[in-house]
Image (cartoon, rainbow, N blue to C red; front, side, top):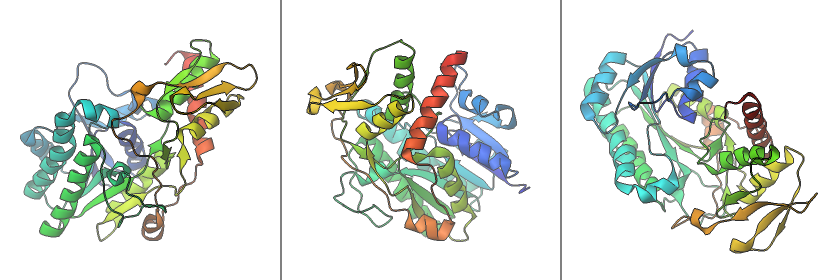
Length: 344
């Protein structure tokens, strides 16, 4: 049992929930911060069976005094910041809000830690979206150039660089995880992987006939979220803070992920056409199961992201295990169970 105390902002999201479970298993006392809302946002924590083990509090990342009071109340040894407007497409519609929460929110947190208890170790959730179309053909690592292509990515780059500044200027133990795409059944349905897994189940149950997607050629380095939170925790256990790319080193296209998801229910897709006319067809009956809708294209998109997690492997002893076909199958199978018991 560690006896440590951790504060997780954005605890009701995918990463917050999985990290909370991991820390509880390690013997931490976990404080979970989330925005005040009229509804119940603890669904992920309940699904993991840990909702009653979290000491919940309401924290608004746009309000400095609120963050400061939370730190005084919790007295954490570690803070993990996941609070964000995390949907890339939505950041184009809400660039100011995204910038405030993701960029200035992290700065408010850092400044609060510096004033209240600068010994607290801070983890910041950075993102591979910061790289944009950097032009790197090999795996992107901690030294690769940043070329953000969305308000979300710009806001995350701001907070990422503020972590480095507070680390250098004030000697604080601040680390960033430059995480490539990491998925799970706890992903929101607005994200492409969960949209696909949820859609596969809906088709299998006869509730719809196809899934409408955007850029099928976009390639991402997809991993399993429960594995990635282990790397986050490991960063704050190091004597020296730093930034780490967390990825699998393998990229797959959206088309590939759709193939894997349908294969999980015994459906083989065949692909015809190109661009907006491309369709994925069930090879057994000719039914169109995937089609393209231009409304899902981003104003600016990243064609390919693949990470190089060599530093995380060497210094953190971290290694990804789940493959993308296994990940897609896990998500589809979980969504199928949820549908069968009426929880989706």
